[in-house]
Length: 487
Image (cartoon, rainbow, N blue to C red):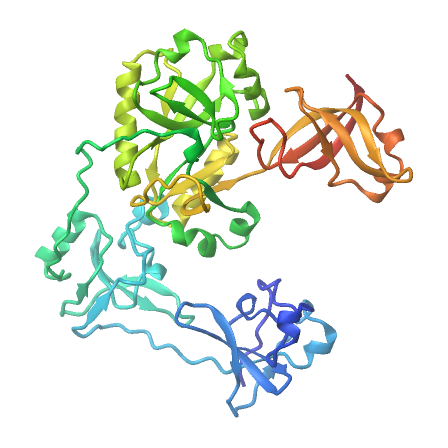
């Protein structure tokens, strides 16, 4: 009999009431949230989850005639559906010990690349994640040749290679050049002759004029909870991208022709002191974050005035060059690093800082870098930029530059209320930067009913938000907690 299968680990494999699920003939369950091989009853018979060529589960009609056994652990399913939950007989996977001469392509295996993580480099087998590579790939380890082979669960493992015939690997091979050369010499890897036009990173780039009304390159954004739920699915598209820290400040632009430092929309101008401005390059337009180390972004709005003492520590963290045409980011960021170095001349007082870019080649490296920035450095998040992407101002948000940010939090003072028939709609909250806004999300039923008792004028309230507008107002603000100590 087929084995009992648990749905533990698939918390989202539950019946949905949404029309797009209930209106179809297949079961009203999201197939891609369920294990492959799960059988449920639809409107016109049994259906089974099956992975397509991209690895995405779909519902297809079940045509098998062998008996199936009901899953035991179905607590996460509605009772009405429990009697229909079954699982098909899994196919036995043969472990391949020897590989005959064949052609193996690494196309479709973007994560089959060398890793610098200790768990890979400390072992004798090759420092490549075996489960991200095709079956039958041969690479050299510390004590000889290894081959990827699937175990009884279908998971690739590295095992010692005992065969005596080479495996040819063609198309795109994402390995270090030193390893490729070594494997070619040993005739374990055969590469095709491919003509490539490498990017000349030393070549000068043309920097044109730029005006604020031209706009800046907009980012797409992925949410932390999505990544936490499925890092592989959400971060895999960004393998090979440049990854940098997202700083907690205001995105601003420097116009090297007009000598103006403005918000990215051009609506606010920052009146920086002369000693600060002298470090910024002429005839070059830069994009970056204006930050005050150790202080939240809300404080940056105060830098509109030259007399603000925070100019003494304010930094301009630059991450791109404006006014370039058809110049890939890989070249722009190298040129930007040169511009910063030339502008600062090693002076420790220089407020111009280059945002370091790291090309990361695995999901683990990207996710580890994000956690390091957010938890170890108390940073805002990360930005991922495609090496070959051009700078595209204005228009749609670009999927070639994507940010992953945590939510910010700060405090403000209650200065008034918006209510409807003695029930709180929102609090009027004044931030440290002087901005007053409506805080209306995150309150309980009791808090809305007793708002004058719980939030008297002058109360400090803590709230979270995504980011600040150019005017200093928080976006998507949500109430977190209140304090009864008055200011």
